[in-house]
Image (cartoon, rainbow, N blue to C red; front, side):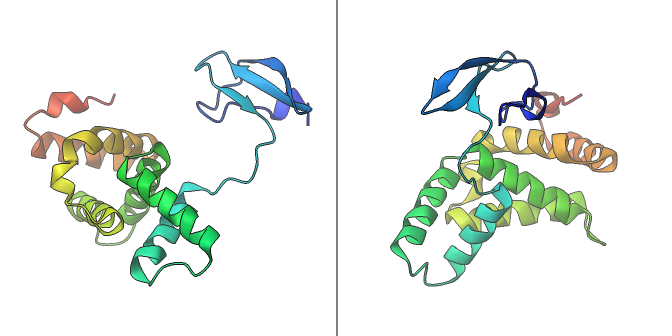
Length: 169
């Protein structure tokens, strides 16, 4: 799989990279934009939305039966509590998807998102708002459409005493 046209950086989606040697016969690349060292043929990765769904099921039920599934879910839960980038991205995707539902306002969308955070992590979001909110709102802004972006900026301006901290444009 050395066709360089299909290669892009998983960190920044950039195409400015150089070949950076081989490890166990697999070509490695180094991104010129963000410096990430990556391969074009990674092992199976769970998409953020799939991890989120599994964590929701894990928290609802008695837990996974298989030890390997339990270990995976425990690792994902720890990453969620550490605000790992995949978890923040999955929360943002959830918010953007929820906002598209009829009758949803930005207020209800964000409330549902923070409720999901509390359900999965079993933590009070108020204690982690300052650490998580800027990254979460930025991800929401990046993946949301123009109407979502406008609604989010309006909500932030109306509800933040430090609205200037969220200048996204």
